[in-house]
Image 1 (cartoon, one colour):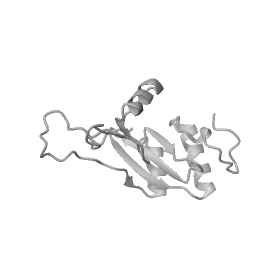
Image 2 (cartoon, one colour):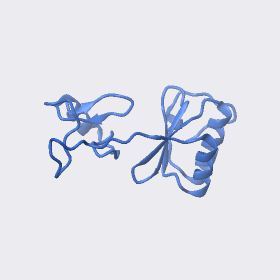
Image 3 (cartoon, one colour):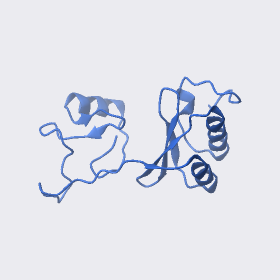
Image 4 (spheres, one colour):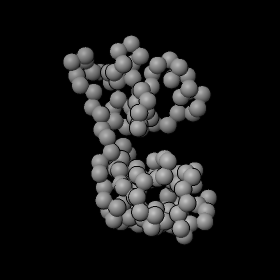
Length: 138
């Protein structure tokens, strides 16, 4: 989930479900924390009503740059977006997020193999995608 300061956080299923029931989450490509009364992101601590809350989205990163960052150890994890994993979101450290298009199956195969070799966490095994050359990613 994307927080009002642009950073991302993960919640356990019970907390997430309760926050959805309370109307505190705006569903989208990234779920966003919102104030249920206004429908807008809540103000950050110390902010006033006139202060805009910063929101950062993922920056675009070319495929080869992602591979190079992976090999250099500059990627903390990768999330392939369902249903086919054609877009990969890479956590580059801290709150930096990058989006890379990986529509070609050879690109997916290469990324999964590099991540497996380097121990970079990813969700590719959870997708229902058949990629030649990858028998199992678990």
